[in-house]
Length: 459
Image 1 (cartoon, rainbow, N blue to C red):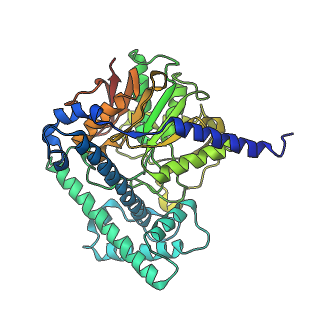
Image 2: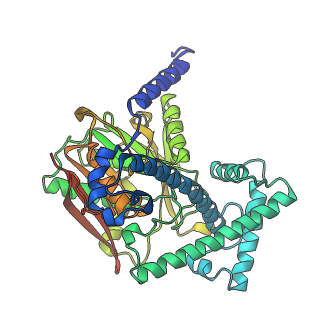
Image 3: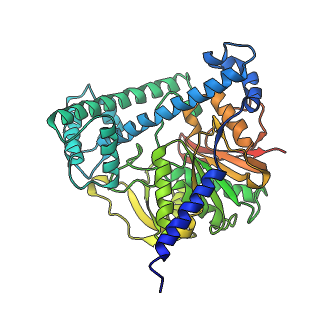
């Protein structure tokens, strides 16, 4: 029978190990010497702050990189506001009103019925946020509003929140329309399409499926060997709650990509889930806190539960549909076991759901690190460099210069022969020890192909 001190001792040891890990993995800003080759090669793409001297000086770089990191981190707050807007559009737990589709969103401000729908949903959401018993996601949104000085507890506060919600809805509409127009006119690259948008943490399972397909292809071509992956990093692991694509609010905020990757590595025989080390790099305090709480709960012997959501579409190609649904059904079988799912409300009936619980020992393999991989780095000794780095739907928030900086910076943290995998092309116009490698294309539907781009670290 365990002693009464066993749990406190486990928690103490967990905190001690976490502190040691944090001390060993302290990011620092990319030094000028490392960035200089990229800055020289991309002189024409430099921002005005770095064009004041020719060549760029260390002082100018050191100031710019810190200012820019602060600016990028400020875009996280806008991403939180977008999550709140998605809750207004797509939430089903607090209202009986229909959801606001992308088509409705484009007509907001021009269509009387859509305007009325938005008003009603805003009133219902504010009423719910003022309630005494809030879900985890709802509570996070109320805390977000309160930090901005809004309170749903007073008439004046509710009035201000409603104006804020509807203004953000209009902003999302305008942002979507502008993005679509610029893509159509080819004024921006799809791989840099969000470089001026706020940074959202929402996620889904679809990129994780394409990553598994790519890993399998790498094994078939001899690029990866069984048991060869021991240390992995994930850039921007995501924290899903009412994501903008078929999202809802009936499940709690959750991170899936770290577990999806460990599960895939185990299924393919590339890594042992009991010993693989996984680091997540993120600038969102909300994401990092969530993973840290999951680790703390796991240290006390409790598993992590994931709701596995997907929305099969009629236009999907038969091969993609069969492959993805097989992946969805198997998800978690190497790192956990099936769990009781949260029932999908009738208003979100197009969403399919199943659930798994992840073993505590697997959760403990994940360590969050607060780091922006464009501007910050970890000076790792060779034995601590990564075999594999994954970054999906994250580099799209940066322009070409910053993507080139990320490519060069990540190369310093990947062991020779290791790989970076991403679903966005990273420019190769600047010096980098990451060479183009295997590319995978996956036909989802007519006119919709997903890609994974591989980059291999040279010696």
